[in-house]
Length: 396
Image (tube, rainbow, N blue to C red):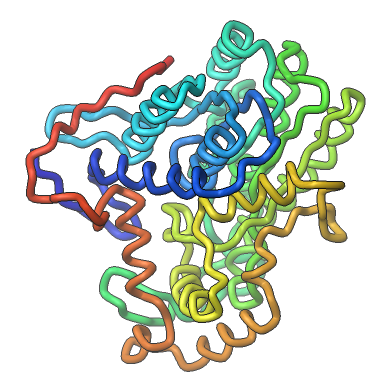
């Protein structure tokens, strides 16, 4: 079939298999062009099919020669409906890993469930014995609790007064003002249940109890802090409450793993175009302005560049891991540089529909958004007939 992008708000409902494969190839090529690092041997990535989780898997596999197991929730093609981008991404990754003699496996299912945790443990026992790195990179709008059966849904809302600020329709380029009503206590509780640290803790506890976490193992989860302008809807909002819980969980897990010489971290990463970030009001406009400034200063990094720097310089660099006063790894350090933030905020005051292409990188944002789904990828003929049915090797 001939596959074109079909968008609805911040979602693209189609994905292109060859475009996704090309994007994976580009990330692998980047890692292969960098200096190899002494990293993990066997890696479990929970949330492995897109964004930072996928980039983590690629960095570990091709940067350190690690065996990898990825857990994710994606769907195959069905009839005229394409597979999800994460499905195509994983198929391409698995094929490249096999070509390079790397051991890799993938599990599709609800990572919040006990059944997927049990399945993962059995596969680790059978194929790896133990894992020495666990990456937790789940991004989901809802979660079913594996014990109580309660279904939680997350919301993106401020806590306190109504929040009003500029936002961007990144499809049309229109800059407008949006207002978001504050969250209720119940919405805060549910968002924390979805995006906080409870499930990460459950994973590490069950892996540990099963004896599949190696001595000296590392676990890392990902977070974001961001600038003052996004604080009310992000760090001081419902998502921020969840991230605080995630970061507190890292302290608990560090205590758990320390007896075996292990460690737990939260890495605060740079703002990038993802399906999750595209859904947050105000954030797409901020990212567009940030891209413009960081590219002008030659500081811009994408997912794979961020993860290579995290793995090679921080988690597996020389000496102790550098953290801030809260114990967080700050791989967002270039984004949060004073000169970068000052310039972004200066432009923010003037940004409107007429000048968005001058003061912000709208084109770059749009390019990255479509790249997420395999579109607007150099070297791909989007008028050619392609087979939307793609199998994932080593799928469990």
